[in-house]
Image (cartoon, rainbow, N blue to C red):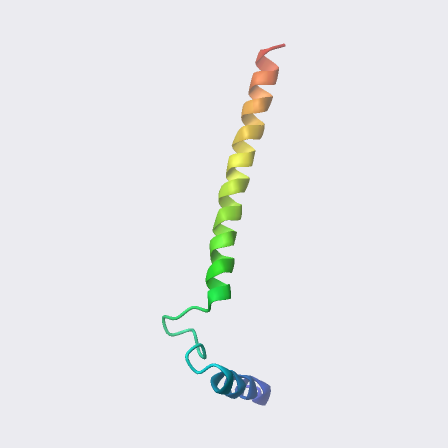
Length: 63
């Protein structure tokens, strides 16, 4: 383990002890938001793909 990692942990503990070391069942607010947004992106891409396929199907059928 590099000493800079330890320095970062000590600094985080001093600055915000309640938010330090979020890996033990706690998740930083930003990390939770990023995870939620990534899930939403996946869902929106699936919806977009379905709509593209539907549009192509109906365009082909109307010809």
